Length: 335
Image (cartoon, rainbow, N blue to C red; front, side):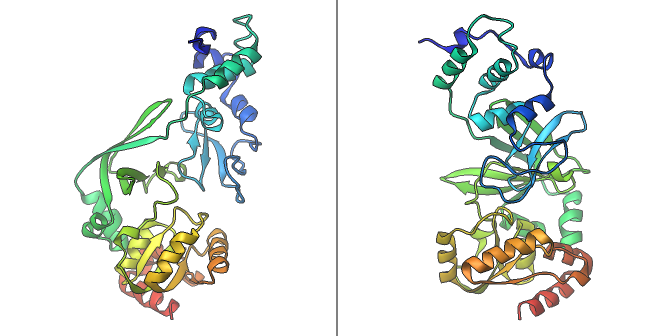
C-alpha cells in the first residue's frame, strides 16, 4: 500500500527546533494563545471560563494546561497531536511542512504530503494511566488524618490508593512519576465498562501538576459509596470534600470539577433516591457561579462556608476548626 511514510523524509524534534521554537509552534496551532502565562479559552470545547494557560516549566519547556479539564495537559507536539488527531510522527511531519523544513529537504509538494497524511491518519489513542501501589505511611497519616480527620479506612472505602509509581502513557511515550515524602501520590480509582481508570492526585505539587486523569465526566466521585436511599445528598466539588461530608454524617458526591454539568439522567436517578439535594461548592467567585448555574437548572438550594471562617470548602474548614465544630457549622448551614 502506498504510504506517506515512504515519501516524507525523516524529521525529528531536533530538526524542528533548528528552525522554530516551542513558542512558535504554540502560536501557530493554539488559536486562542496570546502570551505566556495569560489565561485563555480552550478551543477543544465550548469553554466559557479562561482556565487555559501556556507556562514555562522548571526545565524551561513550555506546557499547555487546562485547569478546567485536568486531562488536557500538552507540550507543543502533543497539543498538535490532540488537536488534529495525529500520531507523533504525523505531528512532526505537518509542523515541518508548515514551517518549511520538509520543503528545504525535498521537492515533493507539501499539499500532496498533507493529503497523504490525512488519508492515512490513525485514530488518537486515549492516554493510559497505570499505577504501582504501596502501603499507607506516616506522610499519608499526616496529610489525611492530622489535617482532615480522614482515616485510612475511609480512604480504602472510597478507592483512594497510595502509589509508589504512576505511569502515564501517550502516543508520544511514557512518563513516570515517583512517590516521595515531599510529594506523595494517590490514585482515585473508577471503573468504566469493566476497566479501571484513575485520577491521580499529588496534593503537595504545584497547582499545574496536581492532577492527571484518563476517565470521563461520567466518573462521579463517591457515587459507588452512596446508600440506596437517604434524606439528603450533598453535591460538592472534590472527592476529599465528599469524604469530609461523609465523615460529618452526610451522603455526598462530586462531579469532575465545578464547571462540569449535572446530566439530566443522573439528576433524575438521584432525585428518586434522595429527598433533598443541596449544592456545596467553594465560596469563591467560580464556585458561587457554578453553584448558581446548577441551582437554576434543577431548582436546587446551595450552601457555602461563611467568609468569616477563612475556608473555601469543608475540608479547609475541618483543617482550621476541627471535625466537631465543622459538624456543627454544617448542620446550621443545612437548616
